[in-house]
Image 1 (cartoon, one colour):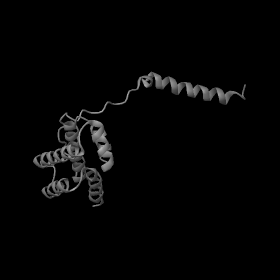
Image 2: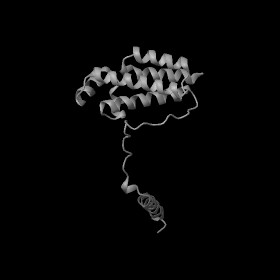
Image 3: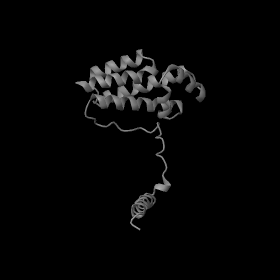
Image 4: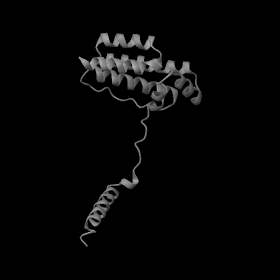
Length: 154
């Protein structure tokens, strides 16, 4: 009997974990649905420029995704390269120019909203507007990520 004791204890522990998992609803897990990009989210009062830029980017991408009739997550994945954006646009029945304009319009609006809410310093808003006008959409996220990492160094 003492030879089988470790096996019995291990089986008991496994059974306890499985039963706890099932009792807490583990068998009925469903992933969180993708958020509707057309729902307006209120501006938070974040702690710094880095988090404001993140909120600007997410709000702008929400606006673009809403205008294009796609999810923000799918749009973000499409912005990883020019080819990915071309394929995404063709798959969803619009042109790359339509997608680029929607992203630019969404980011322009979110920068204006952040500026109006007083959460984005004027010089950062001006730089962000110039970046949106000058940088192709598939490079905007990469540029914002670089800016974010530079700001977090200070």
